[in-house]
Structure formats: structure tokens, C-alpha cells
Length: 153
Image 1 (cartoon, rainbow, N blue to C red):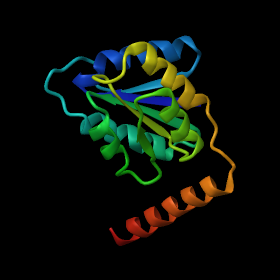
Image 2: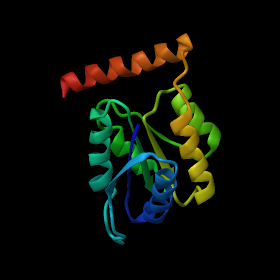
Image 3: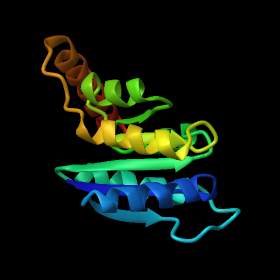
């Protein structure tokens, strides 16, 4: 499993903590940026390349971090094959994977502390997509609508 991680200035320090945490657990982690703290950087510059990497990776997951995580999720979800979920607690991280087959978790550094963020990432990465028919049906519909949208664009 390959983990891609990205943040702007708002999530930079939390990104660095999560990256160290994941490397300590033996994960392969690619930091897509920003690799230095830059007070006026813009999250789309880092999140879009992360989303593209996740979309082309067979077993890749993404972690994006900003102040709220909302803008980061919006950008990530613009890329076909990426399903980003803003999560603020452990249950949301679990449901994002289990019910929606999300492949990117979006965190808000202003809303989630370091310890909780690490636990959420661990839950997200270790939760499998449910095989329940209702969840499979819903994810198929998302992919169907996504495919029809990208054909028109």
C-alpha cells in the first residue's frame, strides 16, 4: 500500500507528524507537498497532484490536510477515481472507507488534534470496504454518474 500525503501551510505541521507516524509503522509514504512551511501557499497546488497520483495508483490512498479539510476534499474530488471524505472523528473515518470506499481522507488541522488525527488515519487505512449490497450499489451509482459526467466534459 502506498500513501500519498499533502497539505498547505494550514496543515503542514500535522502533515509532518502523520507522515512520521506512518513511516514508523512501515508504510510507504510519498509527500506531495508542500515540503516546506510557506505561509501563503495554496492547497490546490499540492492536493491536485496527490489526487492524480491516487487515481493512477492501484493500491494507493491519500491524506490531505488543511485548516478545515473542506477545500482540500473539493479539489481532490475533481479527479476521476478519487473519493475524498472530510473526517472529524474515528467513526467518520471508518464509515468513509466501509460505506463509501473513500480513497482519500481529508483532515482539518483546526478541528482535529494530532493524536486523534493519527488514530483516524490508522482506522481509515485499516478499514475495508463493506461487501453489503447496499454499499456496493451506492458506490456503483457514484461511479456511473462520475463516468457520465467526465464523458460530457
